[in-house]
Length: 226
Image 1 (tube, rainbow, N blue to C red):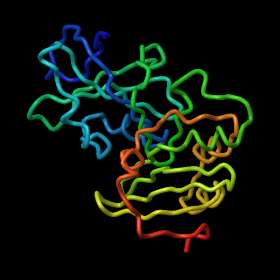
Image 2 (cartoon, helix red, strand yellow; image 1 turned 60 degrees about the horizontal axis):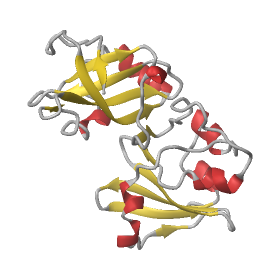
Image 3 (cartoon, rainbow, N blue to C red; image 1 turned 90 degrees about the horizontal axis):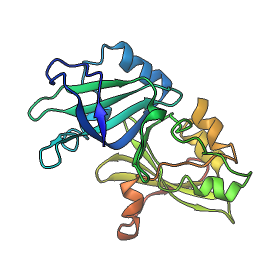
Image 4 (tube, rainbow, N blue to C red; image 1 turned 90 degrees about the vertical axis):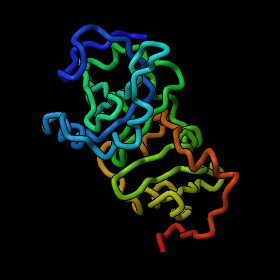
């Protein structure tokens, strides 16, 4: 447990409050900057799904919070919601690396973002199999769809990914890392770490991958995207 400081909303008492980080959401630097510059008072699509889980726990006396960071930012924002209130309360964190993040903390990434700054030891030896296998379980989210990394075959160097447009609307796609990056328009830091064979992904929160053995995916596209 840690104390919630620097509260930015007058709706919350100014006294120090205990908080617990339930999840980290990594935005691209561009989207994170837009949110900071918006005045932090507009509800955002990337917070909507988490409102019910980010409430005050009356039994434990702590706020359940989401840590919102940019892919390269040192600062961050703790986000929580009051019961019956759509707008979040916010607490600014000057340096999120000073927070005590628990092991196994769920990490989600917006499409285009890379979790390059959440842990000090993300890099290992040059190992293509270990590198690409670490992406299995990753979900990249956007306003229009989500991309789930379902499997990787190191012998064939082939990924299986699931593009999800709705709760029951998804398409399976198989291709090499190069084909995946080209088809789904990877760019910037995401593209850089995707091909950095020393990098290891730490986000494995795809619910579709966890449930994959219970489902079938009738639609499939080949590596050329057709």
